[in-house]
Length: 130
Image (cartoon, rainbow, N blue to C red; front, side):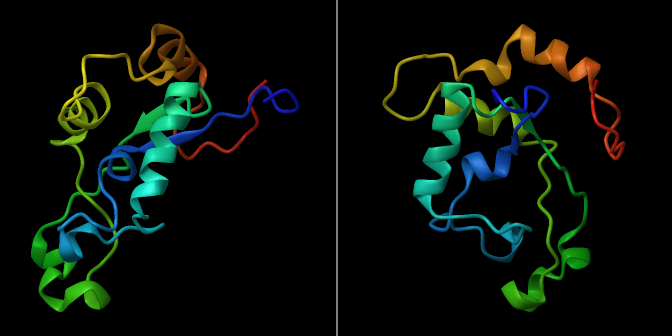
């Protein structure tokens, strides 16, 4: 960050809430793929330490038929629908994980981060920020 102050880091809720031990089968096929539990923990650590700025959705809307779930992991298309589960899953995993007292997840949910997002160009716009 010292060398690149305009660099922002984002993750998405599936990577924060799912890992290779999650029992979701072909529904969980994503690119990049969902990683091991240690990686999921490292992402939460990144949020709490301020390395990760935002939690996005990258929502993909498709039916089980469109995703080709019946074809198994090899045949299924990538993508994970998150619109209906984004906030509850982040709250469940980040704010209220089983056995933990309430705590703030980190800078990714604060007012300053939301102000930064308003200054970003629209998604798909690839010009460098000034």
